[in-house]
Length: 241
Image (cartoon, rainbow, N blue to C red; front, top):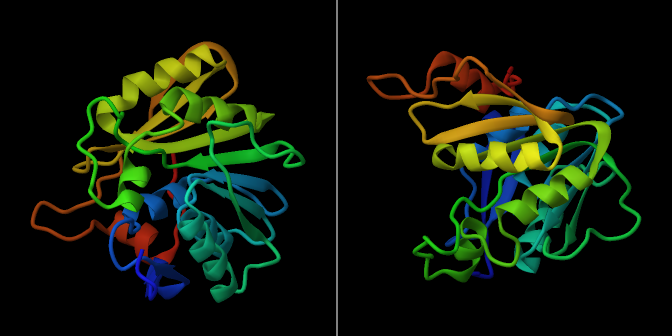
């Protein structure tokens, strides 16, 4: 990682983000994930794979008085996340911890109302990882595979809590099957055409109850974002299921 990060903004400038000049850099997936989180004032959110803190800070900008804890494997990214917390004056509400999800979560965290997560999209067995180590760790499963990732996420939730994940659409059936086995089979799927991405919301349930929400079309045929996507990405509107 280079010593001097770039400073960028998301949500129409409402959130400022320092991020590496090369390698791992945020995409619209983080803003979409944050926009779909149903957190309310006074609730707690755990963001697994926090990177530079984009998801948590976008939630904090939209939802007053919620408490957000980010978990990040890479200490360099976590350090930037903490700088971003200060940059956005969110130190009383947002924090980032360095932790490998292959191990149990740190003691004392308690259970959360919501877990948001953007796991690495590629299984190690099929990936052609980036030569940039930071980007490779962010995009390819390593010490924690998808089963482990979702297991940690569901164990961190209160019984009435909500898990929200964004992932590649070609791994949707795998995700749904894992969640059903874990006892979180009340699943709602929201597709994001034309992107090969899908949002998955899960709640505790015995057995599988699966619904398809109306897709959010991100791009116009002639190019550019649709009005609905623009309202979410630029103006901080929630992403409704």
